[in-house]
Length: 516
Image: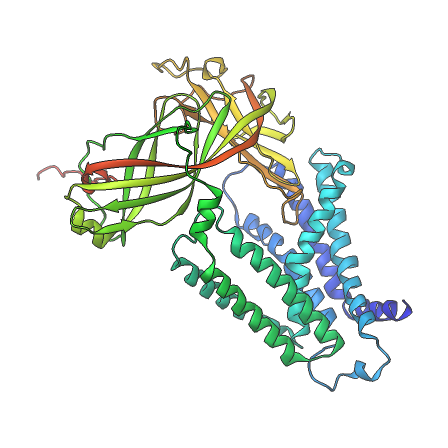
């Protein structure tokens, strides 16, 4: 332990400027965050933009501090001065971890306690979540920086590693974009899980190899093997099978959680933009059949267009989130079709087949809330305020909670505009998300921003409803969604013309000039 503390003291003596700078930046971040809660959103001045740089500078300062600590006893080459000293590699590694804990983890933990208290939450109730945030920060920031630092000897070399990682990410993204169904709902879990396993295995192995043996080429080979293995996983993952498993077809005789039927096209004359590479099509959808006290979330769609001449186009599975509520409503299915296929078949009588990936949720734990003109508490959500007549914003501890909400426009305390139609019988719904299994989100701040955007579940498109909406004194209910079954249902649209479903383009006319 004496040797660990000796190395630690040397690092503190050599890196006191980096340590002080990181602590000052973290303190400024805490002050800026708390001050921002009481400052109304609006036009950003140049000073506000400069203050915005504080947030990214905090993790950057941590990366610089940790890299400089590792480079104090570099592991590249065979002429380092520290090799001649009786340093045990385990104690040397422990000293570097101690630097990360004392000057990154502990200050971040204290800052999180301050932010929770300032936001009106008792910090003692959220200690497990804060510890989870520390683990996430160690996995996402400390572990990668340690890995890059043990493979380099200067900050410039680390910057080159960062450039290499950016190029690798761009290449992986380009590869993924060319793979069918890579954007399918639930399919991303396959490369995500495999990527985490590869990441932790490679980073931990590289750190241990470098400190124990200082075999740079062995470590670099491990990195290249891990990078290649992840590319293979991305290319070979069975995305379509994952969707079929997560969203099985609706069993014969079973009632679907929602009825989705195509409606008639718009009566407008539509012309696709000639500059676009793809043509955006809009298919009106009639929504009905959602059980009371529940919601159905569309998580993905697969659109297949079959032409009479045998030509076929498919969108492959795409991740899409639409919320469907009780009552009759209208929605829109959007898809982008290849321009060449569209121009060949735009006037033909074609067939459109759509597979919808759906998950149903039921409401539990109802809470009645009355909106106020100032900040008010919503149980289970956090501290909220009215952003507008259609939107409630909230500050939630640790992560954005799952929520569903309802409001009856007939109970609105907002003054109705002159000539406004009656909204009796229409219910406003809001979907705030299903939440996540993680006890806390990744980030510097333990305060998550939540939104409750109300939409009208009536015989209209699912768009924000007109006033009256939310004003001080307007009641609404909040509930917690519980996940039900996930299924796949099919819908057909036969004998249509693609040209009738093109996104309408705005028509601009220049004002006529009076004759001279």
